[in-house]
Image (cartoon, rainbow, N blue to C red; front, top):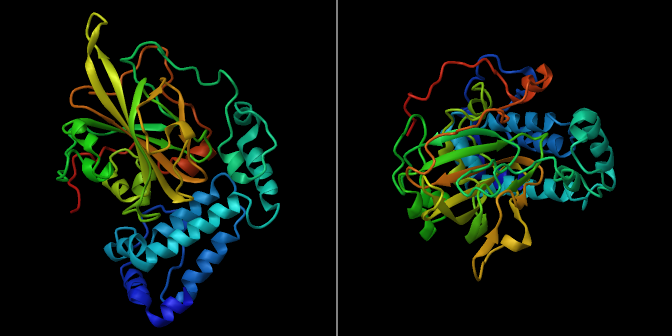
Length: 388
């Protein structure tokens, strides 16, 4: 990084200095712990990555580092360009690879045993009681820990018209009029389905359809499962994209309900995978109503940015692969992560629950303060217009 800055390698210095000049003021009520004194000069950037690499993360302060780094791109077009492209993107990719090697136990010896102990202590016995206790050899093995049998029963497993949550997640309807190519604002969201699905031929099935976001919190179960039964007809585990670069990470965290009203077009540019599931629809009498498609897009966000499919679903698929509702598809190693579900037009008009089904958890105030920041149920901004 010092050499690149000194020689302005592919305009590394030029783009970083433009980023610093474009820094925006912190939003009101930003916590002191997530502020960072970004300034001109390469030593500031080097010091930040050195500090981040040496961290001893607890359950929540890893998100603090991501937020500190996000100020470079916060409402800052030059900052977005710096972290998403050219040598700035290469810098974040190299750092992400190093963090992944750390957490896979390939660097720094037994450091991660203490980190696992710290997480277990912070999660507490009530949460840890959900999981199988194993002899985890690395932090990432612990992060993708498995649930005890029976802890997540699959609802209406034999009813093909019932969609289930793919993960332990916060769910938001994103948009109800998807478009294949043109990013047309709908409420406050736009999505380009061709781009999201890397120009898959199956993108056409979701023209005019619905998207739902399923955001995984860092202290929850990090496997994702099939939302419907059917056949996986196409899979892609690694769509190349950015590792960092939110327009506004505070907006993702601070709307009272994580992700509510956020501009999910951001995630068309992140590293991701996708699965296309061919499923059966039912009519009012319970008989077949034709076949259709449901898309699942696991998005690996900041830090490790991993999307890992089980071998059964790894591409290229030579023939369609049968999948049961609730069956495990893959996992995310350490870092931010979400799934975007895609539905055909008029097939998934709203989130609908039956009486007695879980809709949420009464949280402890300290967890709310750290993960659902600003959870004051502000008036919706969904009718505002997107920036271009």
